Image (cartoon, rainbow, N blue to C red; front, side, top):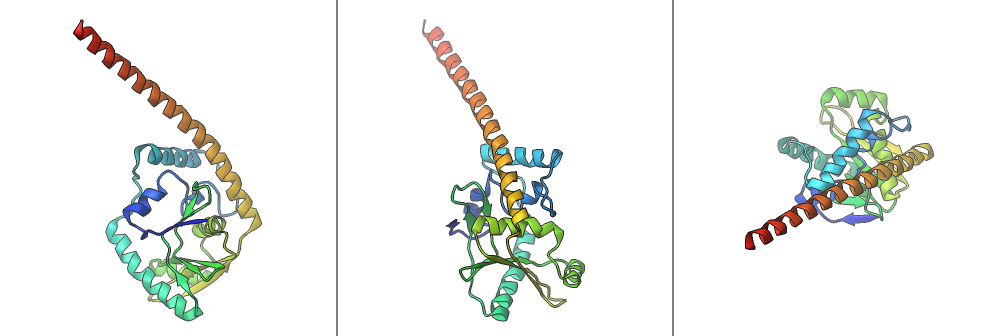
Length: 223
């Protein structure tokens, strides 16, 4: 695992995420039950990531005000967790697999073995999560993918609210989920690399044709 030392939400952090699957987006490829998604969803995700790679920007940036408000509660929640668990929580920017092709943005790395995912839901969703006692389905793959990227032994999912008691759910790598994530990424990059090679060849051919036409026009003008 490689760690990029950049603040989450910064320009460097956003740039690092462009064009690659991340833990928070892998639910586009794998269901909460560990099955590979099929149909339009994964294809749309594939082309979105290709566009990010080729254009150098994303259309998915969250509203800055919402991010700022979320960051305030997240800092509060991280401090609460560190005190409650007497834990050493390190803030990190962006984690990458060794090949740099998959990333994750942990809300904290805990000691040498764990990680932390913080969610500060609206009151009704916080209450639902608290009473269920489980990681909500929408975030099962995010937590498993964070484990996969970082190689950590466990991950604590923290649902934090100022209205209700906090909930901490410890999650360990699920072999079935991990296999599905690995397979989904293999299939994703097989298509991604092929399409990237095609569009790159098309761009190169177009540029070569334009350059040839430019020099031909210039030569004709001199004669």
